[in-house]
Length: 115
Image (tube, rainbow, N blue to C red; front, top):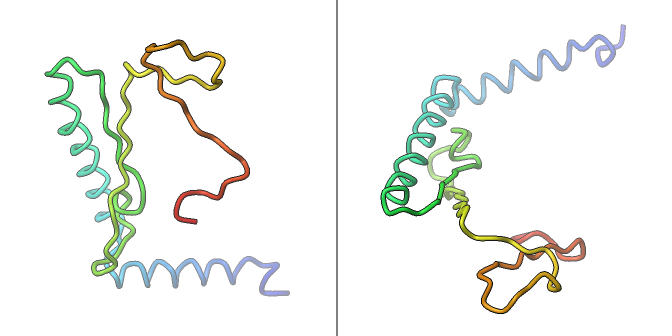
């Protein structure tokens, strides 16, 4: 039987990947702890804004929050700040003078930032 058809190769590759990740410190325990730590940090950053009457929530995402980076890589923390008091318009025709709306920019012709 062909090794590819049996799926055995994928089992072997998967186990090797788990071994490598464990060797560099990426275990289920570490991933869980990092996720928990960043969820707590999101709350800690959001509470002061709530106390000031702002409707802002902070979210972290990316490899740092997943615990899938290794020391020495110099990874950054990706953060999204969501302000529910800011309205977003999708068309310039929706704009009213001094309406406080922000304009979202979306283009299928531009490459992603950093890419």
